[in-house]
Image (cartoon, rainbow, N blue to C red):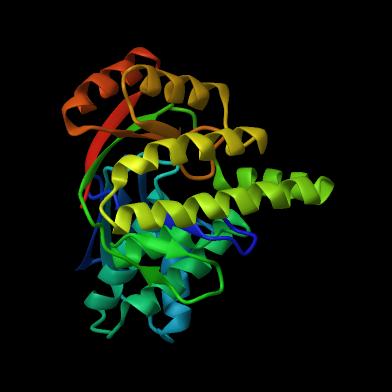
Length: 291
């Protein structure tokens, strides 16, 4: 959530981004990211390219005047444009690997701040929650502009993630919600208030070791997001399939309009729900324990 309301996010450790930075015998910086079919020199990429922009931002921030000769290898198991923060994950990994290679000291706070600047380049007015939960690798209760609050999981719980296979650009979704908010401010402010209350109760449920209470909250949240036109037919179909297969609750993830949905499940029903999602059209599923 944005608009000065809280958002809740937890890290998904079953998928990750990895970056390797090596000295190179050849001049310049060569970037290899086979997952997105990228094999190019830094100077051949536009300045606003998702990967180039991170490197250029780091040069500027740390006043690197002489371009080093490097080879940068990037791999990721996170689906792109799917609501799982793939771009932020690559930016965080790249920032850490790059600064480590240059022997520059850094903190999580510094990495988070740098990556948020990159997120703004690509998403317009992002909430900042993707870069935050990825940087700190802890559950996060987040209100934009306020101090970050991480918290502990009182009792592990299992989530199944279903990918619609439909690319979802956060920037477009964020812009669409903003247009609707400007047109029907009072209505959308009420939606935001309801979602904020859901996020607060969800945090307390997780902290107090009562994750089973999340199911109904997820269903309520998805219904509100549908009214805000953030969902899509593909997401609704997967959410419905998960519930019918025995999920305790389900909702879309991230900016919506495509990408992923998440379902809270009892551990012994995870496979049944995952299979139901595939049957309903999901391109892939991820089962993860939040602990």
